[in-house]
Image (tube, rainbow, N blue to C red; front, top):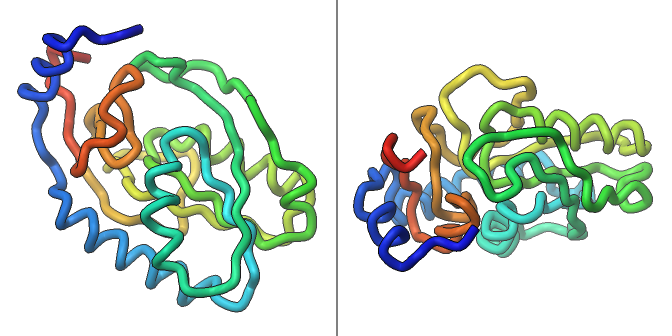
Length: 183
């Protein structure tokens, strides 16, 4: 669903900034350090979760100064809406993870259902070990815990740094919470 320029501007104006660009850059540095301390020397396959994980991967990978390989997984629950639904697998990289150390990299840990399904699929496909990193973790119970977390925020509908609102705002520098009236 396309947003009109007026709707786009109104949603942006009503949103609350939860994390500034500067704070996100610091979080990325801390996240990279934690991942490096744990995974350097393991030659992991990093699975970027499409589409939100693209921004996180693009900003995090240059900070990881060790040998790694990049692949992706594509599974969707939101389908351009603000409510999660059934998992829809677009691409599952079974051969890429077999016998490998795997680092799943995603934008946000919300309920944890998508991350849990990806981790389970990696183990089913023969991964030697599965780790998970998220740029943002919402403060709420999760079905699956990420080993590496960039920053924690209140449980609200978010956009920016890869997170979207109805397909928009992924490129916004900062983490913003959508106003309740726009949900």
